[in-house]
Length: 349
Image 1 (cartoon, rainbow, N blue to C red):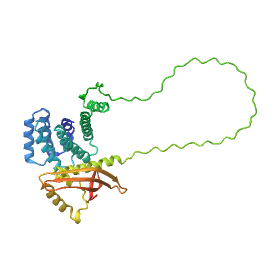
Image 2 (image 1 turned 90 degrees about the horizontal axis):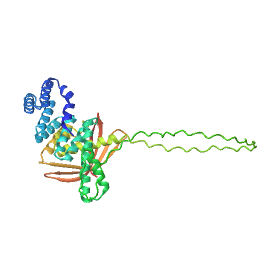
Image 3 (image 1 turned 60 degrees about the vertical axis):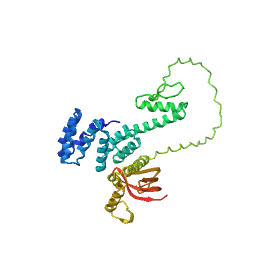
Image 4 (image 1 turned 30 degrees about the horizontal axis):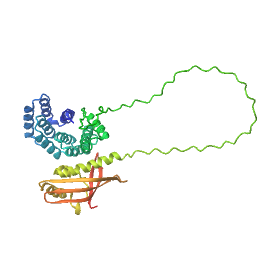
């Protein structure tokens, strides 16, 4: 997972911001030529005129990262995603930085937010696959520490290690097998049968025909093949819904109020019939007040209803500086464009 590829891929995005396109182009040139202090200075001057300009803020986050100022880069991308929750790229770059710090849970949540924002964002999907492979590697490594003689776990760990281009060393006394290779399956071809000499026919007398009664032929029952089960086309939608719920919980945990509120639709059924704006102000105050918040969800079950809405039921554990609770929760979501947004939430088992 790299930041460099994302920066280059977003050039069209930067050029689309009109009046600030010139600044963005100049900063990119300085960034490409590794003139990082000059690029940062140019970005700061541009942001002094327009502090909220997303293209310049994005570039500034990349510059900070290239300079090795990772914590400042994380802060820059966090603030950018909070102010622009519709952009998937800042979430992806946050995930890269978190992964570099081995904060894999945060990296996973950020990638899920990127995918929830844009389900067609291929880079985020690829990075999520890499992240899951790394998590698998850690799990297999732990399994080997507990049971080092298990050859199945050894093979799995080597296979995961091969994805990153380096065989994984294992502390075992057993003889290590060579690194696993991915088999390439070629199309099945029929073997060519070599011709053989045809046997010389032997003349035999033709038998005399014998009159026999014609048997009555009964039609045989042709077995009807069992229908092939169709794949559940809703599986992809369910994964998007789970990603939306994970992103909502992560925004709540990190006290990213803008990202949290962006998870709700405009027709959200607020408690006590409040206006959404009033409810949003109240939630902003409650989420911002505690020193820290931790929200964890588990046992997520998703159902897609006939009317196009979806129901996600899960266990929610909430911990803040002043309160700790665990309860069942249900979110009713509906699709708006490419995103699944919360329309209603219910508490209770």
